Image 1 (spheres, rainbow, N blue to C red):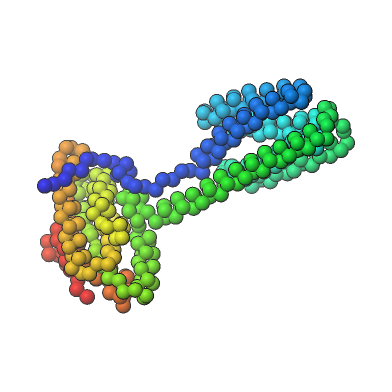
Image 2 (cartoon, rainbow, N blue to C red):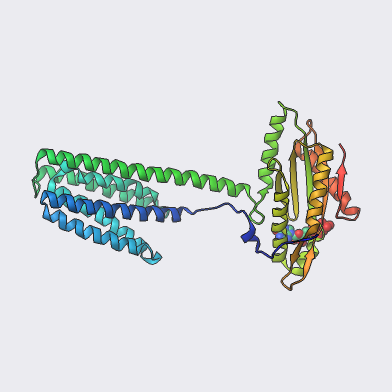
Length: 362
Ligand SMILES: Nc1nc2c(ncn2[C@@H]2O[C@H](COP(=O)(O)OP(=O)(O)OP(=O)(O)O)[C@@H](O)[C@H]2O)c(=O)[nH]1
């Protein structure tokens, strides 16, 4: 009995590689950073209140409110750039005021170091902006050190208290740097994986593409030198696909291709590979399969393609057929030679009336 496949748009039905854009990740990182900053400034309010440094209590209350505002701003795309600039200015202002108030020995200017990776992480940043950002941060850091030598702090604290503050700020700085670098390294690795997947995947069907399968075949060919493996190649070509496109439209043709690809993928063992070889042509590479088994698989694929039905936009139910060329990939030959033989068999199948499996015996 014919299995009815619901009319889906190809893009919805595909196992297309998840591709999280770097910008989205950067935004998530910024939001997490803002939450962490809000928490840290709340802790600073308590700390400075205990130390009786009212100026920094007031500044940190202001910082907490600013970060709460920034977090709200992150929800609106148009406000995001302003939000991030405000957060940057706050970190710089806090480092400056806290260093002037308590001296460089308190280590509050170390927190400027956590901004260095941020200068480079923003995916939209330009090289000149990055260089200027780095120079400004370096100047601020050195300037705060020098001012502390030239001027006494506004709120002198005991040496021991300053040491504790410096240790705390050092730990904060290491934690921030470690987190940022870790997120950046993970994002780079994920982006590399996404790109590799995209380069190996056919966008319409979600199957691997011709290049990817050819690469795999080369690996298999190398492996075969050491272990005797039986391999087979099946070329599948949908029949009268041009007519289907002309009659029902290219978008419908795309849907048929995507659904047929899915069907073939489901029919195969995980060790076998299906690729989109060309327009309406697919290639199946069977591992550990002799010619008889390959013929059985090809027959099963042909039957399942013929059994699936599609609904056109006009509500018409229709089906398609495919012609398949099968051959063994012999141990002593190039992959391309076996594909070419399967192609000859496919051509014969088309000549002999289509909707059939034709075998090319080595
Ligand atoms: N919708 C759609 N059509 C495609 C795609 N790639 C190729 N085609 C179409 O597939 C058709 C292939 O036509 P032909 O090579 O003449 O083959 P056919 O009509 O299937 O005839 P036979 O193979 O002889 O049975 C062409 O009309 C191409 O435009 C695609 O990605 N989407």
